[in-house]
Length: 198
Image 1 (cartoon, rainbow, N blue to C red):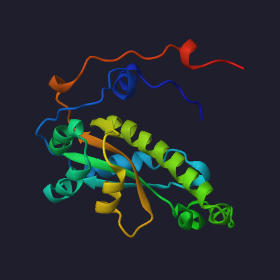
Image 2: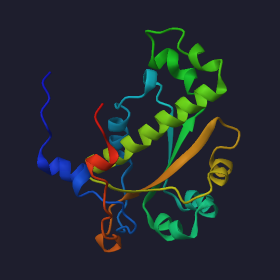
Image 3: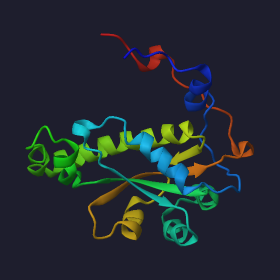
Image 4: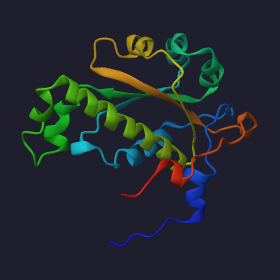
C-alpha cells in the first residue's frame, strides 16, 4: 500500500500548532473519547508487540485527591483542574501477555524472565514510546495534552499500584485547553544540531 504525506491541517494538529497545555476549559472528556484515543495508540509499534504501558485515567475527585500529594507545587493547579490526568505506567511483568501478543514466537516470554533488568529496560523504553503515542493520539481525536514530570513517582506507585507490578513513568493532563494558559513557544534544535548522517 502506497503512503502519502498526511494533509497540512493534520500535521498542524499533531505537531506544528499543538502545544503543551497548562490551563483547561471546564468541559468534560467523555469516556468514549478516551477509548477512541486508546484504540489508536495501541496500534503503534513496540518491541515484540510487548505493549507494556498501562494507563490510569484519573478523572474523579477521589482519584485526584489520591494523586494530589505526589504533585510538585508547579503542577498542582493545572492537574487538579484538568478533566483527566493519565498516569502512564508500565507493567514489569508485561511478558506474561506475550503468548497472546506475540504468538508466532512461543518462547518469547523466556526472553525476559531470565533477566529482571532486561525486562525493566524493555518495559520502560516501550512504555515511554506508548506514552508518546498517547499524546499524539489525544491530539488526533481533538484533545489537548499536558505531559509532565514534576511529581513523586514513588508516591504515585504507593497510592495507585501498591501490590502490583506496575510502575509510574510520567503524567499527562488531557482535556480541552484554554489558550490563555499557554506560554510562548520555546525554540527547537535545528537538524544540524540534533542529527547527522553516517
